[in-house]
Amino acid sequence: MTVALNRRASDVRVIGLISLAHGSSHFFHLILPSMFPWLKDAFALSYAELGLLMSVFFVVSCMAQASSGFLVDRIGARPVLFAGVGLLALAALTYSQSNGYAMLVLGAVIAGCGNGIFHPVDFTLINHKVSTPNLPYAYSMHGVTGYLGWAAAPAFMVGIAELSDWRIAFLSASLLEALVLFILWINRSKLIDNVHERRAESHADAQAANPGGTPESAFAFLKLPAVWLCWMFFFFSMAATSSLQSFAPTALFDIYGVAISVGSYYITILALGSAVGVLFGGYLAAKLKAPDKIVSSSLTLTILMCLLLASGFIPANIIPILFCAIGFGYGALAPSRDLLVKQVTPKGVSGRVYGIVYSGIDLGAAVGPFIFGFFMDAGLPKALFFGIALFQLMIIPTVIQVSSKTMTKAA
Image 1 (cartoon, one colour):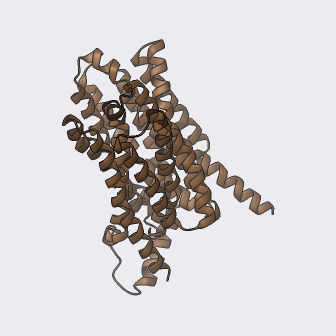
Image 2 (tube, rainbow, N blue to C red; image 1 turned 90 degrees about the vertical axis):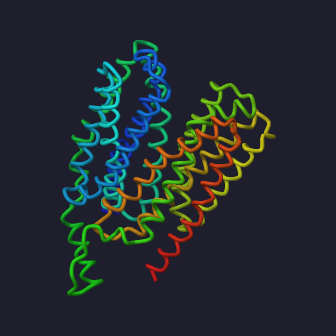
């Protein structure tokens, strides 16, 4: 009994620390866009130049995410986590001292490098430090704090900028991230992932699968079809999500006459619905143990909601309900999605696998708004919701195939 309680307490501590770090990374996704109106006036920038800053951020993050997994497997997750959090604090400090567009680009590059480490680090620590029965709840809390980070950033940044100025807002974000780093540092003993033990497990599994054979290269995991199916899952999922976040307020104005300021409020509803969905999804994942069915059902819900929005016949007063439902569906699938990725990840290479798989998020975030921007410029706002529904529909076959490969591996 005492051992079980101690184990649960240890799990809670680890989950809390990792979730705090993950929430701070999502917070930093939106500190720059939140300041676009101030930066536009301060440096006489166009919207295209401002948008390019986010493209730089996500492209750099994509490359960092794909490569940081190898570093996690080489030196361990903890030092990489500390470096990533430190880079985010440095990025916000760079933004606060910017004297032109070049410094803003530099800040975006630094922020992208810092942001790119979180998924390889987080999931390596969760899978190694949290007991198996509590994994669904760990994935759930990890996802919730991400959505809460998204929800908190605009209020934090805009509130401080209106009370003082944009430089103080960025400086405050830097100090906040430094506080996160301090909390992680004083609890550093809880974040040791025993990288040597993971390497030994990987070597033992390789020897068992191929006794006496030549050791596989560090890139052997790239041959696994399930890895690339998971990558496609994240690519299409984030392409849909980022496009909705970027253009939904404008599309709702064009289709339903909803004020853009009100449409922006619906994005907050989307994030809060996702947070609730993640909590419920963690419960479902733990109880049902059917991740493919949970993910497919959640995607079906979001597809139907997007098609209703695309119809143009929805009363304006129920649009917030539809956005809450879309967010709930996005959130509910997240813990089961993460379980599927864990199930197809070979032992000892979790950092590399998560780095590659989750790089799809960053690339999707960079590509999705770029594609749908053309439809919006062409005066086709309904195409936004139809396209998002199509992207989500394309995810379902990847889930089914990953699940089938997992069952084959288990058999």
